[in-house]
Each structure stands twice: as C-alpha cells, then as structure tokens.
Length: 490
Ligand code: HEM
Image 1 (cartoon, protein in one colour):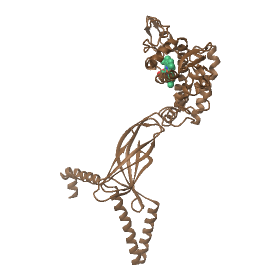
Image 2 (cartoon, helix red, strand yellow; image 1 turned 30 degrees about the vertical axis):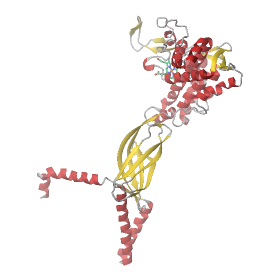
Image 3 (cartoon, protein in one colour; image 1 turned 180 degrees about the vertical axis):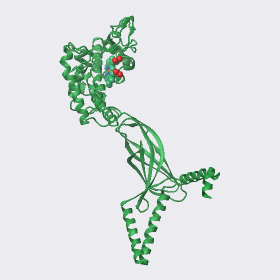
Image 4 (cartoon, protein in one colour; image 1 turned 90 degrees about the horizontal axis):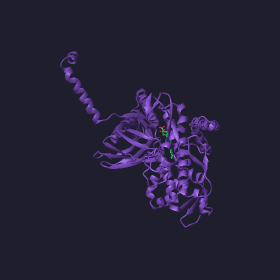
C-alpha cells in the first residue's frame, strides 16, 4: 500500500505537504546549534557514570540522583530555548568608518515574548562570513523590553565591508552547553581610507609653526624650498603610503632621481641612476619586512597581494608609484608660487585682497611654471596628428610646459596673472593618465598660500634663486626669501 501511495496520486500532494510542514517547523523554531562546554561534558560524563552505577547496583538512591541530573540537562535545554526565542535584532553601523580607526557598531535587541525574560544573551557579528570576535553581552532582556549594546570595530582596510549575520548564543542557565542560532542580517559599510596621520603635526601647524619659526625669531630669511615648500609634500604622502620613518631622509634624492631616469638618457640620468635604484631597493626591503604603518595605503597593497588580488612581486613598484611623483612636483609648484609672488608683489596684493582667488592662483602657477615639463608616449598604431604622420612604436614627447604657454591658446602667455581663468592649463596632464594626485597637490599648494596670506604682507627675494637640474622637473634647489610680516617686521 505504501508503494502505491509513493507512486500514485498521493505523491503529488505528500511532497508539498511535507515541505510545508518543514517550512512551518523551521519558521517556528529556526535551526539551533549546540556545543557542550567543558563543564557540560563533565556533567554528562557524571550522569552516564551514575546511570551505569544505578543499572548495575539497582540502588534506588542512585536512580534518584540520575533522575535529578537528567532533569537538570532537560531544564537547561528548555530554558536556553526560551532565552533564544522571540528575540529581534537590529544593527546600527557607524555613519562613517575609516580604515584603522575604531568605530562603534550598535546592536539592539527587542524581546518580543510576553512574559519570559531572556538571560545571558551574547551577540557576535559575522563579516564576510567570518566571526569578528567582538561581542555584545545582554545579561537580562525583560519581556517586551529593548536594549542596546555596542562593540568597537576596527576595519583593517578601506573598501566595502559586508556584514552577513549575527550569531546569537546563550549558556543560560547552568553553562552546560552553548546554544546558538544565526540571524541573517546582510548590510554593507563603506570604509574610507585612514584619516591623514601627519606624524607629529597638522599641515597648518607645519606651515605656520616650524617653518616660520625663523621669522618669529626675527631673522626673517627663509629658504623657500627647504623651509616652506618641502614641509607638506614630505609628510603627507609618505604617511598616506605608510613609508617607514627611517629612510625618509633619502626620499627627495631618490624621487628626483626617479624623474631623471624618465627623461633622456644623458649624463644626468646616468649620474642619478644609483639613487633611482636605491629607492626601489629600499622599497623591496620595506615590502619584505612589511614595515608599513597599519591602515596605510601601503598596508592595503600588501593585504591585496596576500589575498591574491595582485602579485607580491608588484608591491615594491606600487609603493613607489604614488610616492615618487608626489614630491618634486608639488615642491616645485609651491616654491615656484613663492618665487612668482616675490617677483610680482602686485599679484600677492590681489591675492591678499581676495583669498578666494587662491585655487585659480594655483592653476596659474602650474600653468606658467609647469613643474613637470614633459612626458613621452609610445605611438600604439599608425596615425596622423596635427598633419604629422606617426608610426606605431615611435615615441612622441608631450610637452605640458609648451602647451601651457601656447600663444594661440593664452593671451600674454608669459605673464603671471592670477585673475585670468587658468583652469584649462595642462600642467597636470590630461585624459586617462592625467595626474592622479592633482587634488592633493592643489590642496597642499593652497594650504601653504592660505597660511602665508594670514601673516605675510610681502614676499621678497633675499638672494638669487638656484635652479635644481632635473631631466623632467622644473624646480628650484634654493630660494632665498624674506617674509615681511603684517606688522612690518621681517
Ligand atoms: C603640482 C604638483 C603636480 C604636478 C604638476 C603633476 C603633474 C603630473 C603630470 C603632468 C602627470 C602625467 C600625466 C600624463 O602622463 O598625461 C602626472 C601623473 C601622475 N601623478 Fe602627478 N603631478 C603633481 C602632483 C602629484 C602628487 C601630489 C601625486 C601623488 C600624491 C601625483 C601622482 C601622480 C601619478 C600616480 C601619476 C600617474 C598617473 C597615470 O599614469 O595614470 N602627482 N602628474
């Protein structure tokens, strides 16, 4: 008969009926898992021992003890079940999270049961399917009550973190076993890069404090390159990348040499080649020793390599790729700005009269001075550009400096004029490979000019500036300046 039921028309409704019953049971009682604690295992062992002794001896007292022990185990099962039932959870993620910085994640629990409180509830988040090992503990949640607890979460790297579920557990009442269930709660949190750690000081302090200290001591003269222009570039990007403190004293020499090696192969390139190689050698060491500060971009590059997203062998070059182009370029822009304002005091007065001109002034400085003069491109396929035939494989020199003074594009191209609209300058390149750090470079240059505007009435040349020879970068080696404060003191 059973065979007939299984193959006959019964089959058509038995299966759906069974699956409905299964669904009902699951929703009434979501799946639990159970793990005996050490004490629980001892207790079960003791119960089995008493059971064996009772059966062998027929001793009534032992049967009584066995009954007591078994009822304690049963009671544990029932009470822990009640504790886990009827609970609803909500997770509140921080409004903003930064890599490497602790932020609070709140867990709210609502006990929907009418009469029974829930005791000893432990809630743990699962991120990307892994346990976080950060728990919120609720000693007692009364019937109908709502409670909130929080834990500190430090996201190791920036990007999207996927919260998956909550693991809700209890050892109530006797700690014999831990019973838990998973509560699906998918959510995503965008983790921003670590906030800037400028080491010892904030950018504004760097500019205002240390580098104008001479002025405060009444000596008045500073080197625009060494004392002002290098301050921000030498602290911000190395900190972002997480570059170790030791070895920073070589950064300027190494980065300059890296630019030299990108130009023509001339004496300058040959002379500086060992320094360019030195930077790569040091970077390999940094990667090998994993000497990058936690939460930094460099640490994220290593994490990506560990996760198999990039090759480990690419890491040393990647550390340099963002650092090397950030130094001489921005130092040149800042120093060039100081030199230009020293030579054109009326432009400094215009800027002081209206500081909202600072962003355009930075564009005009980069237009006129073009810190990065030229880069080359390899022709990918035969083409014609401005009437010239270019063949695949040939090299073309893209001269940003020349475009920025193109007389057919700019009126009085050699004049420094912060009131002209210089926003279309090409000093940061253009297109897919346009400068990846131009936002930061603008910010740094604007910060220095802004800090000076607050306190300096006049910038004067205190000697002849000296150019720094480089195959690509157009910058200064020395820029003797006198900063005249608002009260007329030098
Ligand atoms: C005033 C300062 C700066 C100037 C004038 C400048 C200029 C340039 C130029 C002309 C290019 C080449 C664009 C091309 O090939 O078409 C470039 C590329 C690049 N710059 Fe800058 N740069 C400056 C600051 C920075 C800073 C501060 C950083 C990093 C924080 C940076 C990172 C880069 C990178 C990574 C590239 C390569 C982009 C690519 O090939 O996709 N630069 N920059």
